[in-house]
Image 1 (cartoon, rainbow, N blue to C red):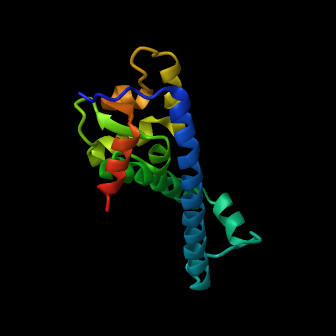
Image 2 (image 1 turned 135 degrees about the horizontal axis):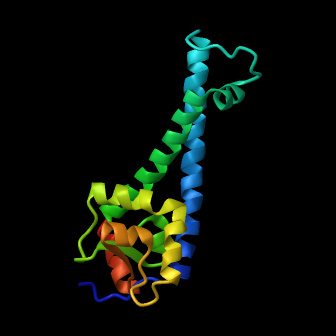
Length: 165
């Protein structure tokens, strides 16, 4: 069992804001690459714009292409969190706020658990449960995946960061 205190709502929220900015940047890059791929298909005459003025309008009008884009954006977001949670238990924002996610037994998350936890977080709304669960400070994603978020000491946070080299 971890000797570190459990993270409260406001520390989690601050971390989520940091991570949200990084995820937005990844989403923008993903969208640019997706637009380039669709433009490539149009240039190769595999797709046609028809009456649409540009590629973006074409994607918005096509339920299939719009669905693929939305799926890619969710996938990029889930993979971002899952990668960091499985590697060190900390995303970029969590590192700044000295937070770490771990299983109830104090172990790092596996890929399936990390991906499920990311999906269960409901874009951060799952953290609202921490405001109600004052004793255990568990979010929806923590309850479902049997995880917890702890606040590390400065020394332990530095150890986690240095172990990544």
